[in-house]
Image 1 (cartoon, chains in turn cyan, purple, blue):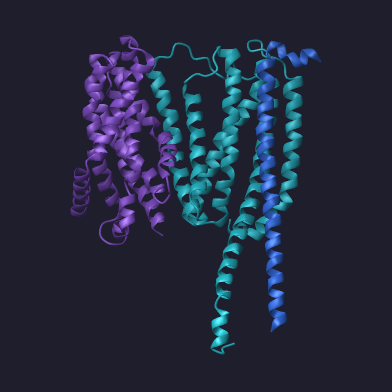
Image 2 (cartoon, one colour):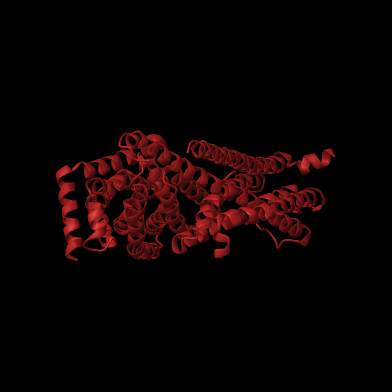
Length: 255
Length: 221
Length: 61
C-alpha cells in the first residue's frame, strides 16, 4: 500500500496502466455495443427496449460501486492519512455522479414504454435519486472549502456519513412500500436473465469498469498536478514576500 | 455532566433572549404548510391524504433554517476553541448544543404540528402517532443537522450547501415519520415505524456527535 | 437497416438512452483529459519559470 503512496511513483505507474485501461474500455465497449444492439435477441415481453438494460444496469452497478470506492478511499484518508486516498475519493465522485445520472435517465426511458410512466417512487429509484444528491453534496463541499487538506477531511467525513445512509434509505424505503402494499410491482429484472442477454450485459459492465479506471487515473493525475501547482504558487508568494526584505539588509550592510 | 448542563443552559438563555429563532421556525412551518392547500386545492380528501407528508416536509425545512447558526456564533467568539481544548469532550458539547437547538426549534414544531394537522383535515387516528413520531424524529433532525452545520461552519453562505448536504440524510426520518402516521390512519398501527424512528434516534445520538466533533476540530485547525 | 434503427418501434427510447450515456461518458472523459493537459502545461511552465528565476540569481553572485 505504502509503495504507492509516493505521487511520483503513482504518476509513473498510472502512465503505464492508462493506455491499457483505455484500450480495454474501448474494445469492450465496442464489443458490448455490437453484441447488445446487434446480436442479442429482443425479449419476448419487452421487445427491443431490453437493449436499454445494457446501458442502464452497468451504469447503476457502477453508481453504487463508485460510492463504495469513494467511501473506502475516504476512510483510508481519514484513518491512515494515505496521501493518494483523498485524491482517489475526489476523483471518483464525478464519475459516480455521471453513472448515477445515466442510470436515472436510461431507467426513465426504459420505464415509460414498460411501466407507462417516466418515474415511479419505488425503493430502488428513490434510493438512487438520493444517491445522486449525495454525490452532488460531496462535490459541492470540496468546492466550497479553500484549503485542500481541510476540504479532503471534511469531504471524507461526509462520504462516510452518506455511506451509512445509503443502506438505511434502501432498507427504509423498502419497508415503507412493504407496509403500503404497492398495487403492482413491475420488477426490472423480469424473468431470469437468458445467457444471450446476460453476456452482452457483463461485457458492458466490464467496459464501464475499465472506463472508470481510465477516467479515475486521469483525474488523480490532474489532482496531483493541481496540488503541486498550488504548492509552487504558494512557495512563490512566500519567496516574493521574502524578496521585499533585501533593501533593508543592504542598508545595514549585511550580505 | 455539569458541563453538558452548563452549555445547554447558556445556549437556552441566549435563545430565549433572542427569541427570534423559535418564532421564525414556527412561522415558517405554518406558512409552508398553508401553501399546500392554496396550491393543491381545498378538497378535504386530498388534503387529508397528503397531510402527514406535508407536515413532515415542512418540519424538515423548518429545522434546516436555524442550523447554520448552530456553531457559528461559538466559532466566531472563540468559545468553540475553548470547548475543544479544555473541559468536556467536544462530543458532549455538541450534544448539549444540539439539545438546546431541539428544545428551541424541535419542540415548538411538535406543538404546532397537531394544529396544522387539523387544518389539513388529517384523520383523527393519526394525531397521537404524529406527535410521537415528531417527538422521536425532530431530535434526529437536529442531530443530523449538526453534522452539516459542523462541516459548513467555516464556509461563507454555507446555508444552501448545508441544505444540500443534510436533506438526503433526512430521508429515512421522513419516510418512517410519514409511514408511522399513514399506518395509524390505515388502522395498521404505527408501532413498527415508531420503533424504527427510535432506533434512528439511538444511532444518531451516538454517531452524530462523533462526526460533528470531528468536523468541528477540522474547522478549528 | 431501417429495422435496426426502428428498434421494434421503441427507437424513441432505446437510441436516446445510448446517446445520453455516450454523451455523458465521453463528455466526462474529455473534460477530465483537458483538465489534466492544462494542469500539466501549467506545472511545466511554473517549473521552467522557477529554473529561470534561479539562474539570474546565481549569475549575480
